[in-house]
Image (tube, rainbow, N blue to C red; front, side, top):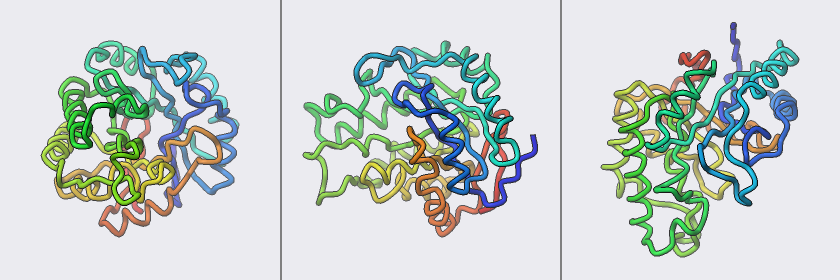
Length: 280
């Protein structure tokens, strides 16, 4: 497939009604991507085995045959107007390794995001995760769980929304009205995570949903992105993590411009699980 991302405005993290936490149609996502001037997108709907959505009505699973049939039709429908890739966001948990490997290996995904959504069985999206913990204890447990995941699972291309937990800090852990934390306080964990990713040829995702969650930065924090680069990391994708059409492409251009100022010269996209680099 010949890609021509001339303006490098691409969104490589998108959810549709194939995800348990979205009701949006894939076609609406494509139309909004075109309206917003994007040249390419990648659908990355959720696979989190045994996890249910907020009202316990749907598992975070989808039928891969239906998924590919729907998205391949859209690739053809929008051919020449929008390049569409087919990916997946997998929820990393050590006891799910074999199931995740089977799922990913048996389907022709272009791109796989590996994300930590459950920390010892609890999603920090829910206040329950923080109960009885100090801010440091909550973050220590979070980063340690990522290290455990990375010691066990490797069948993904980039690690998704590192420091995702910051979006959901309870009011009691918010300093000066801002959801922030000091990266340096957790640098030993962060360095270990980044080195594991780099040494295994994995990238990181810059996820702009952080802005929508009230942060002044994407996930991960720009300091982590700089550290990834300092340690020799080169693979960086950008995604909005949109769960509805209106958020497609959210802050992609602005974030790309900031990355360039940080010395990031290339954005990565994946086709058939192979990384390709586009100059910013």
